[in-house]
Length: 97
Image (cartoon, rainbow, N blue to C red; front, top):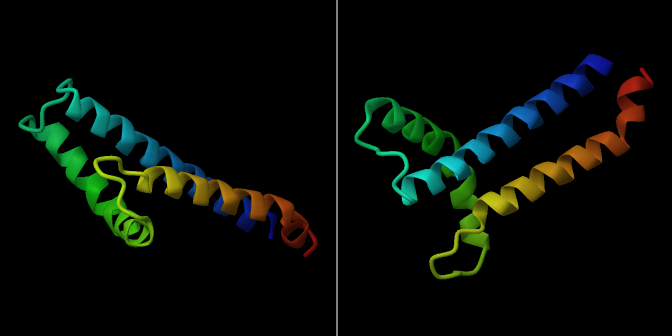
């Protein structure tokens, strides 16, 4: 069962990295450092949007409108961190078997 705990923590780490990469890439696109007309940049951006948009849209439905400020990635990161805390506090469940 320790393996299951470690796999869950690894999955959470990968999701954390994907969200951070999406946020940084969105900043670079908005500040025109990256150009979506480049095929590689467009493919990566499209892939990240396909992965994260279902999660973000669910969060956006709950959040009140904030004008041009999108807090969905921040809420997603806080949610991921809360799940990590819950798993770490219940690690004894995984190691007890």
